[in-house]
Length: 195
Image (tube, one colour):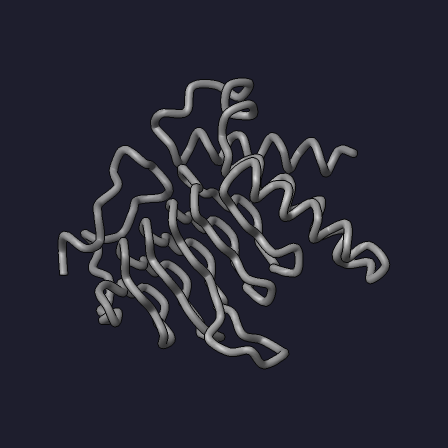
């Protein structure tokens, strides 16, 4: 049980770190749909690991989608300190892999481009930020410390420490000015402003 409570505490701290509008743990626990979705995902992911419980895992996922507007497949693999800001319309596919300290904004799709079995969804490294409405499609890799601009459509790998913007996304190396110092939301610089 201590690991469950430490994960909840870490998620609440992470919400305060990423959102300057976060007011307190009790309020955040009650009203942040991104937190509700990730907490539900963690339970569904544990159920998914047991083949006999995959049906209940999918039912929990769909119920959470109904409540939050966020759909995270229980088969996805998500690291620590994952944060979804606003959340509505986020879709994360079954074979998606997400590293630590990743932040998604609303309307993001981590989807597939194939009906084939196997790996068909993206892999996001650690410390990746994905802007509102972005679509990352297929079994591609987004390197550590990269940013995906709002409404971009990414269909090719993005190297570490890069920015991808546009339709289709154009990839550029991030400059020092485009990096978020730590995870301080008060010093956030929109990567699309400095291309």
